Image (cartoon, rainbow, N blue to C red; front, side, top):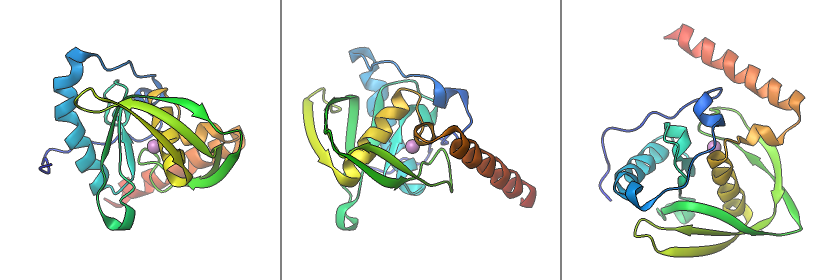
Length: 177
Ligand code: NI
């Protein structure tokens, strides 16, 4: 995949588009999706991050890109209309961050393993059984498609604290420019 040069800016919370559920990708969207996916990967690698959902670049489609880069080798996955079809009864807690909440991290509890069904850029259907980091990452990205951020899994107290900290840090960063 060639590295596109015009990277889509990543929205930072709070932003209305991050709270808006995305609509399903239709066959008529696929040309636009095939152009957008490489740009999303480029923005994600540059950030750097391991996942990016279309609403984070202000596109309201059920599309996400993921790459855990195992052993520092790129292993890009494009998820068109991904859906969690099975969850484990066992839960796991791990620290999460988000490119739309730069510098903010918190422990989030989710089902420890999931099955996710999705289509690729050729419309071919796939299923992944994921656990560990991949399970958390897939659930985090699919949450974005429903207008949900990782902080929405925290208590209101913790969420407000992180959001205030983010706002304060952004204000300081702008003041320094
Ligand atoms: Ni995120």
